[in-house]
Length: 157
Image 1 (cartoon, rainbow, N blue to C red):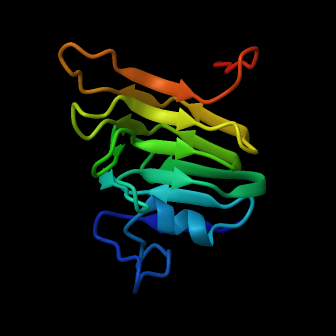
Image 2: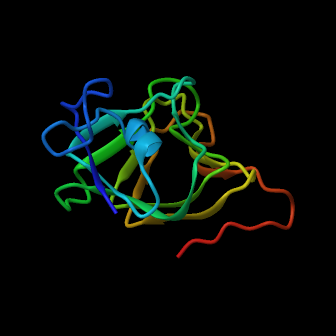
């Protein structure tokens, strides 16, 4: 198990993920993480963009990778996108646990903050997280959207 650090002052090119040389994005940390690693995210706002204006996660681990605030303050880390109609897309991934993070729409054009796609999705946890939606007048904004077929369920605890 390793600890990987992310900070708003980090760098995805020259960073190493160590406390003195953190990465800039959560996505970069996920690309180097191994099963059972802990990604420690420093305070601040992270405008994640994996190419479509949002954070797309499509990696499966064999045991949980934990993404947590480095200082333990559950209001200090905010994840947003940069453009597009969502912030976080979960597709083809598994064994990822988000703890104590705020996932916030980056504008009122976001119609879903988190989208789950059925493709090989398993063991995803959001513990003590906040989903924040910037409302758009005249539009029904969806905090969490799924792409399951009829009869499938999403459970929340």
